[in-house]
Image (cartoon, rainbow, N blue to C red; front, side, top):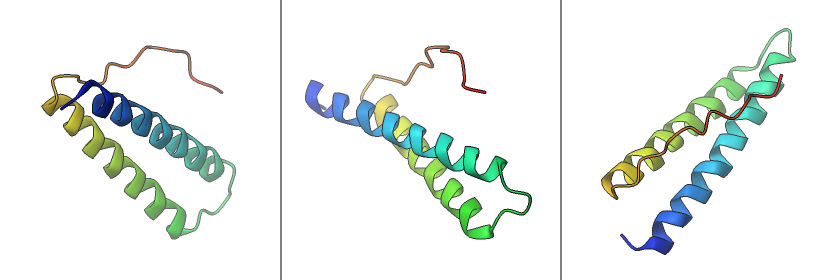
Length: 71
């Protein structure tokens, strides 16, 4: 896998992680969450796992930077 392809995967993972965080934030603000939002979260998590596997296969595993999480 080329350097550009690895960078594309890293950017994709970042976008998916932001989507995951946005869905989780919306879910956390609801008293009763719709199942469709949980399904969206599940699909997003599966996509992140797929990108992570591709990065591992490319010899570039994702390493969490340990950045503080937003409250």
